[in-house]
View 1 (cartoon, rainbow, N blue to C red):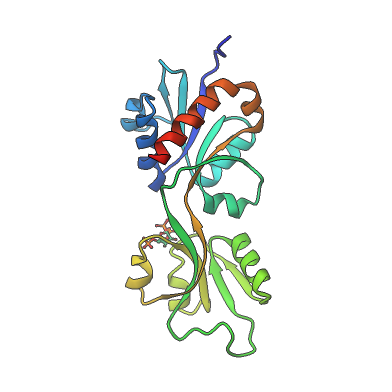
View 2: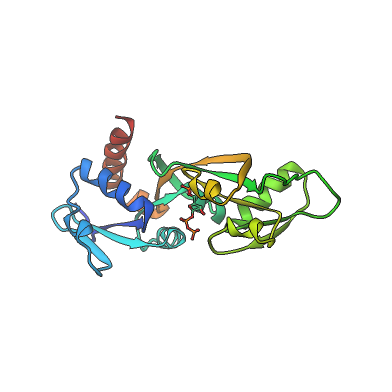
Length: 213
Ligand code: PRP
């Protein structure tokens, strides 16, 4: 028997929004409400009994982890930073970017004896990266415009996301190391995967097909 509760999908606001809508359009989900959302927070496709909610990246994880959303679309950067083991079902191959170590051109990680200061929005990713390198650094957590930090002397370097490279270039920064590739992922709440296996499996295979074409 079909479950009456709508299947709820949490989407990341911003850059991934457009890609997510394109994918759901292609698998025949009605995204009209989503496209014309105004200030509404819950957007429905009543025919397919699906609800979308648009939230900040880290909140996608919270909603899916607690089962308030069955499915989530979120960047691998957010997943890596959270360090929580989610049921990651599809690499959507959109929202592609990478984590990189960057700074002003004169930066040298191995020069001098002082502990280097690294500014980032991603302390866990940064800690893990330097742990693997065997380098003891001081991590300074900031919330945005990370590129500013080495320019005005808050830090020696940054670990941040690079997409087109424009922000680095326009601020005179260069990449010293590429840490890992990032793209959008579809995640599923573990209980939902069991309880609503048929509906979720169909969405996964439809989305997988769109991604592969
Ligand atoms: C991200 C990231 C870089 C920029 C990279 O910031 O932190 O600043 O995008 O993109 P690019 O390589 O295409 O220039 P975001 O725009 O999310 O805003 P933020 O600075 O507030 O974090």
